[in-house]
Length: 131
Length: 131
DNA sequence: CTGCATGCAAATAGTTTGCAGTAGC
DNA sequence: GCTACTGCAAACTATTTGCATGCAG
Image (cartoon, rainbow over all chains, first blue to last red; front, side, top):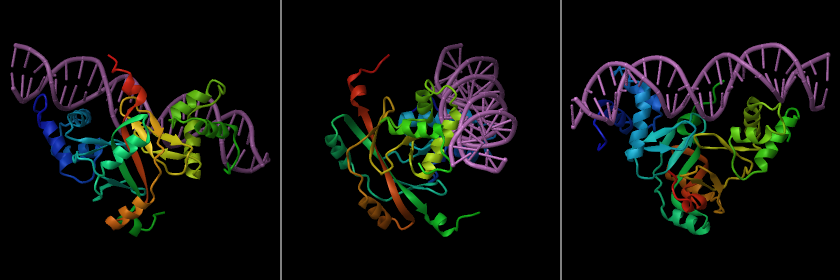
């Protein structure tokens, strides 16, 4: 952490995102930390997630509700269409497709890409659709 | 359009998404149609975009603000990090990567994927950063 | 001390929904 | 005429922001 000034809350928030695989939303981080830190406010969570993302310690993920990932090296995700959960995939991130994209379309200066697979996770596949 | 019942508004909304390349948000569709259709309400735009997406006539795109695309066949997008605009890319959608992903990780039943490149569009590259 | 960071609450943006009236079939 | 669809406005959800106070340096 090499931010402007140390804060216990920022430390906690960063740890919370690092310590989970679930690519949490701001709300999820808040709910997780609140019990042990009753004075923590949701605004602080939002402010620090944004700060940490600007610093590059976290990355924002492109979904309808912002989710954060402490694994800042580009990698591939899977999103379950049923429960909405996000999972990391072991498929390597292929930087060469950026080059291919850039040369295919000279209008754009390609920096990176997001590759998100969609379908059903195991749990949702095994649990018959409720109702 | 084979929906439950014809409505002029739904027709207009569908046309508006089909007639543009800009992958509009609900707000953009509303602003475009409102002048010529003063009685149109934003709620109706949202309701019909959702209906049309359920019917498969439009697809929702996975961004922080929902955007819609009338091109329902899977294809590749580019999102400018500066202005936020979405563009279609001419890179073919490669269905085989779904198979590769599925066999790489048996936890998931992969149906499709979104491939979104990011970087700078020509306009933002040529326009020096303002302020 | 200084001023960045916090807690709180109000504000804003995006989207959904309840209800009474309108219009497609 | 039946009822899905509409306009309107209120409700909700996600996120940002203004302000007084707190705490790191």
